[in-house]
Image 1 (cartoon, protein in one colour):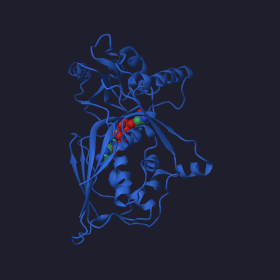
Image 2: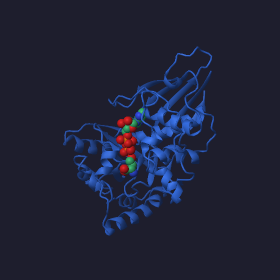
Image 3: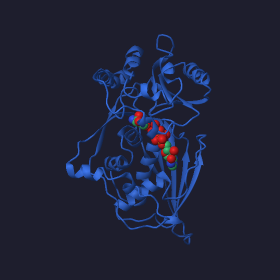
Image 4: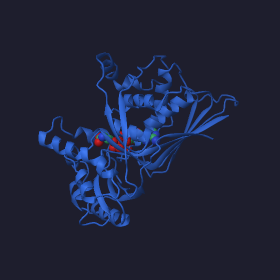
Length: 354
Ligand SMILES: Nc1ncnc2c1ncn2[C@@H]1O[C@H](COP(=O)(O)OP(=O)(O)OP(=O)(O)O)[C@@H](O)[C@H]1O
Ligand SMILES: N[C@@H](CCO)C(=O)O
């Protein structure tokens, strides 16, 4: 019997001005425990895969246990089929333990995609490098900030290469062809398009050891697709320059020890996504403006985590106080929250052979 566990950290994207560019892996881990027991007689599971799911996040959304529908196994199948393998090995059991709240801005989908490509790589014994796995992730989640952080760990800046014309044609293939909708469990035998090589890249930035991340997680979902739909197609030059100035400062500000609260607070301001997302998150602007390092001891900076609704506050101390003040603001809007004190997850996705 073979078994292994994939451990993938969640992530917070953007960190203020770095929309679709900057990501931070955090110490809340999706675990995928896999056992393959080919010695038992086949129980004829669809695609040889039995899924069990353990929610440790408090989310109420039902996660599919069908291997062609569940995001993690569907992504693994995509990787396997690109590499001429049609199904999981006989008698594969995939147990998913998920403490990451779904649709809250902590990169649950990016984490699931990273775990899925890693699952495909392990189960198919493909030996693909993490850099190549990033290409696969980017065929599914088109912005690199969450997936690069969850795959490689730490505080990262990401970028996409300009593709050659033939590769643009390949990457613009509709998502439905990359992850074909299950057709009544019938495997058509069609090979999905493999990703072009070297789509996305990342660099790790330093992180000052004093800085911790407080995630205040409201009790409602904002699907990322909706939070992207409210963004404008075009921006004012002044707003773009505002963000570029701050994004250029942010890695230095968060990598300098001891941290300079005023520099960090300034470097976390944004005019590209947060102002537009307030229509989906009651009280967002007031919450982001409700405290500064001058008015709140321990606070360094505050932003929307990913597409929201989670608020990320970076701080060195007084974590309870900071969380309580933000939770009180949400409460005045009739919204309850949980909160977690997290740190950067420096190692990224790991596979342990049990
Ligand atoms: N562990 C998982 N197993 C299966 N599906 C998952 C898992 N985690 C997330 N998903 C899918 O991803 C969806 C959430 O994705 P969405 O992009 O809307 O939010 P998010 O990734 O949590 O937030 P953000 O991208 O802003 O950080 C869920 O509704 C679910 O369908
Ligand atoms: N950069 C993406 C992250 C989504 O998790 C966004 O803000 O839409």
